[in-house]
Image (cartoon, rainbow, N blue to C red; front, side, top):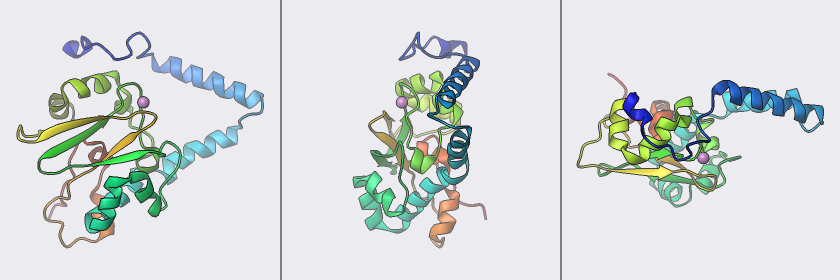
Length: 211
Ligand SMILES: [Co+2]
């Protein structure tokens, strides 16, 4: 841990700020907007609920499963992820310019936002806590193999190229993981259940179901 703290942060001086500070600031901002009539408690609750219940990685999992069973869809997905996701009715805020990158036996992709926590909300929901940690954001671009191995237990062989994609407010990346062996007979719905958020960020692989 001590070694990690020495890594210079891309936005040192601004982040990290303590969680309590952020929470207090968000609360103050919300009450002010409510007082001025720009927002309501109800609206805030609805947005939170939507991203907890209706939008999440299960939507991205549907996209991945479709790409695995439909080569034409996969082609469109890799060409223009935003348009391909919209074909499945998956679209919205923070997903205006999504790019899907494909894992292959030769290339392993992983996604980060070095500046903050840009993330493709329509397919993955809200980012996990660790995605926002300075240690993840700064180290993933410097030593991705080491982070994948030490923090996520994913060992990428030296023969496989690791590509790190830095999401921004303009372009948000997600990964099309490799379809695991032993899933040949599975339906699209069954396949979708195997796909995890971590696999679509690129910090894990999709595992075949146990027999
Ligand atoms: Co960002």
